[in-house]
Length: 519
Image (cartoon, rainbow, N blue to C red; front, side, top):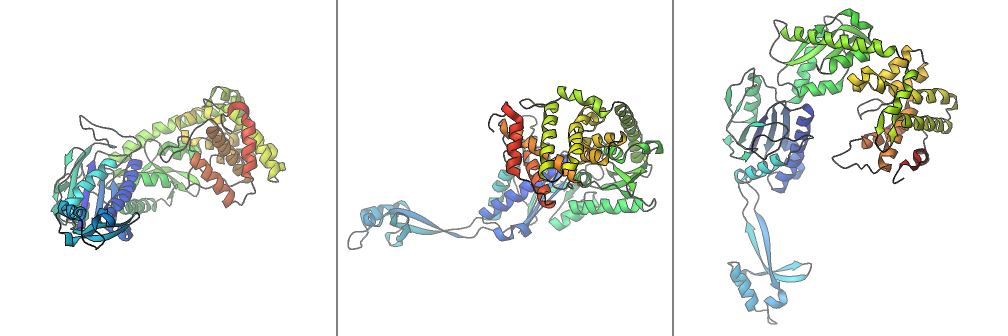
């Protein structure tokens, strides 16, 4: 039988949608397998989860009813149930009578404690339509998000208000209640572009009807549509989108009917580094930079939730807002370059790294000693001076207006400033790369100096946090300690670095001195 469930909400953040999709997949696979509505081995192929900005969708093939099962009811021990001649005792008769069975129906059941008299009965499986409502209500109630909210007097908590629940089992309405809503036998098209009420009888029909009403159910299809439209727009100017998988993935879940548009900005802003331009476009407006090779073009790509932009209103609105953002970015760039990095160093004394671990100035002192130690151990003594210089300057960009406005440029902006100040590549590039890899999708630093400073920075963070009792749990890792540990291991393995982590940790502990509570 085909199960179809749709939870309609107000617009959810992309990260919440993906978290909910993962939880729905895991919980439903387990719950329906445990309820004997689905084989555990076929759960991955029988269960499909989809998500849009306003919908969580489940399609699954389930059994019409649970399989019948055998239940063993254990009674008195064999010695109490039968006499020496094997005749049933009053204990056996009483047990049989209490279970509505005849004494002749009793059998011997082997347990860990020995043989017992008992009854084996066949429990008839329940129809799926009786099992699924309770199961689905339980699963919906267990979905969790990084930030949960409730609305009105309803105690139910979710990412955003649940507006509508649509549930079918083999084309028939499946009644259930969750999130203060009772399920319906209909759904709706795109809330702005085609909000008509839709009667549906199957998942195949559901996908077709929603597509007709401006909702693309599959994230993969939405992504493909975005990429195809991007290619179509850019072929006329012989350019490409500056790669940003994170932004692309976000936009896939930001829209239900993607429309790609191409905009322009004044060429005067091309004097800004590509990294600054692309970050200014991304923050707030979710726009892609357009490049030829590694050179920025005076264009951008955006994705709207719309059918068309014939009058250019979407494009012009984004152009107007972007110009103001680029004006700000240019101002920050020019103002920040007026103060050399070396003159900002003292300001790190006033920037708290972590309340128990001191300031960023304290962290920089430790980093300088760690990179010198690593340079000696990794046959890089000739790079000791450049590594020390990079370590000294690597956190200074935290004091700049640019990084205050665009925090994702930490490290990168410091490297760009150092390059403008004519520091050698062994210094500026090391600063530029030392936050890498910030995620498992990021590249590792391209230089050995960058690898050394990145390892030093991440290890110092781990040792300090653990040393003052900060703990990582399955759901909480506020300081990114797990990510830092994975990144260190990845850099060492990918680049085949000879690093004695045990001794490096000992060195880091020593550098913290009496600061740590549990070294």
